[in-house]
Length: 211
Image 1 (cartoon, rainbow, N blue to C red):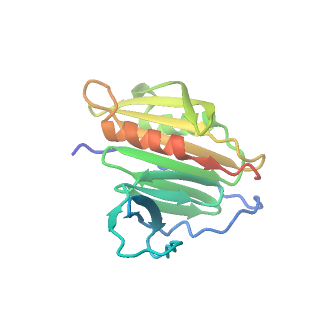
Image 2 (image 1 turned 90 degrees about the vertical axis):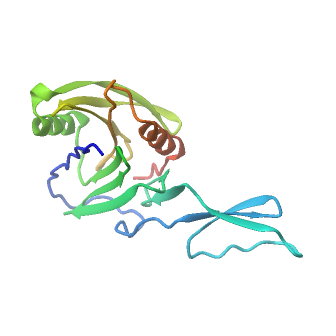
Image 3 (image 1 turned 90 degrees about the horizontal axis):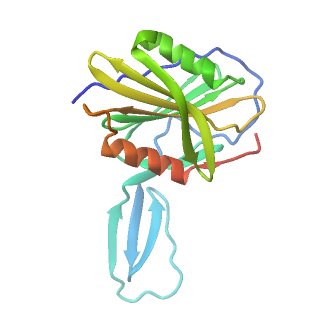
């Protein structure tokens, strides 16, 4: 398996940012089970109860594990593939959630102050080396809005890597960045898993605009 290069952003520590619902970010979102009861489908999180109305006599029940999990930090929520590895890091109020697939990665960054996309991109380019990077504008439909961001095309050690960064514009005092990383095939195309993961996140995302 080819190695994925993951850029870890070094963020400055700040305090005094807006309140939000307290969520244990270090806890992996629970598995979701799909139950089919007499032809009707229900979903339930691992460890939760499912109450069914009515009188069920000799029901036929089938159970399967959903191929996705739901991430929700109280401000941003979305579905992601259940086979992705979930990680959370927090440093002085700056938070990073990582969803690492086979050759694709989704990042959600929450920064305690306003940070421009250009500053983030400049930092990433400096880590990879300017001669190895090509930066261009990117557009992606995230939820029900078309968002303009930045794309970094990286060629390094014979591998092609693409990272996309989008500002979710949720707060006047903090920064929420959604980022996608994909290790490209030899012909430059995205992997099937990378396309599916990015589409799953982008189409199921829900944003709390109260911050």
